[in-house]
Length: 209
Ligand SMILES: Cc1cc2nc3c(=O)[nH]c(=O)nc-3n(C[C@H](O)[C@H](O)[C@H](O)COP(=O)(O)O)c2cc1C
Image (cartoon, rainbow, N blue to C red):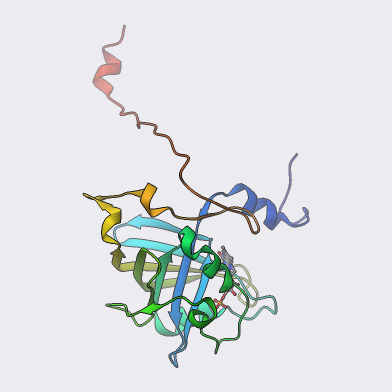
């Protein structure tokens, strides 16, 4: 079967069904007048080491208005990415309704704000990893009136719960991040395996008969 985005009904569902699992950025931000906001985004990834860079794909609300997270990041230039683990998955989900801009989703979810060191948006205390980020740029995707904002941000500071660090690596079996599948389906990362990456060695291949 071949399908095209403009002809296939609900192409979005196919897209989010095949690009899986997606990490979830649980984003805290604040409005220009100081109202805190929390919302999850699974169009999210880390895309560069230097500077350490993350991206968020933020679409429109059902009424085509800009989402609060995007408005806040544009207004303040700051946000925090909190990693979602099992224990806070339900609370994360509770923040995902389209609440008005003056609603603080920390109250809705019962999660606890903790002050950040370098940016105004608070961190989520219950999340084991928080990334304090500064906006680099917002790239418009599609029609400016109805399209998406691709937020590109630089990580200024990462908070990691002490027990999760093993030397320079993260103990991901202990981190237990939640992944997003299509719709309301989620997954865990405990079914893992290892594949050592090969090294290309020209001299070895030249010596082959
Ligand atoms: C797990 C999960 C992932 C989501 N990922 C995205 C996403 O990548 N982009 C997006 O625009 N909305 C996404 N949403 C929907 C937003 O969280 C939702 O629209 C929310 O109301 C936005 O809040 P805000 O207006 O406070 O920014 C996701 C929802 C859930 C539950």
